[in-house]
Image (cartoon, rainbow, N blue to C red; front, side):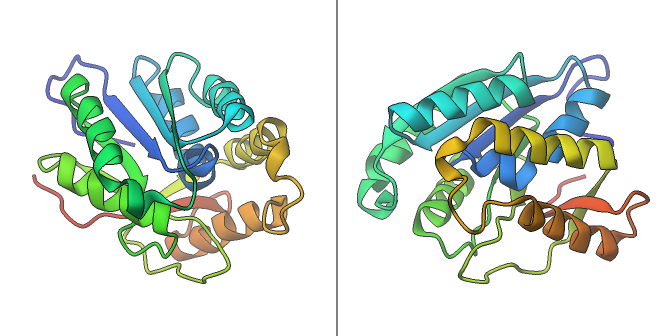
Length: 212
């Protein structure tokens, strides 16, 4: 996998943004594991916006497994009420923008029907205007999966590790019907078909703008 970096000898700076404690891992956990295997010197900044004490603990412990050297920030905005907290979330993201100059931003899709995901996606584009943004996808009840245009093939070992870590680090979500190995592997399997991934697993993204 090749990422744009400003200097040939510079490790890429990767910014991961998630509305909730498990969004980054579900949407692009396999991609992060692959990137860090191929770019061991990458600098990762990991920011979660909604949490409570239990969910913050999950977020920090999970981030430490997916990206052990990441700089982690966990905010405590109210889940499911992001539209009403627009200004505060914009300020928080603005502070991240002032501190980080990323080569790659991983965030939610603009077309995501979950209001928290959508607000963070909109503010990502508002805050990072001259950056490469990969918008990850999350399967959900609304059935809002689209037609991605960027695929990251994964080895089966990486895909299995992603699912293992999800179940290890998010006990508060295990009772949810959608939080299952079948869901996570199913979407990765579908995206693998679309990109002919050699080992039958892939994650997909929506990229609106690429400057070369």
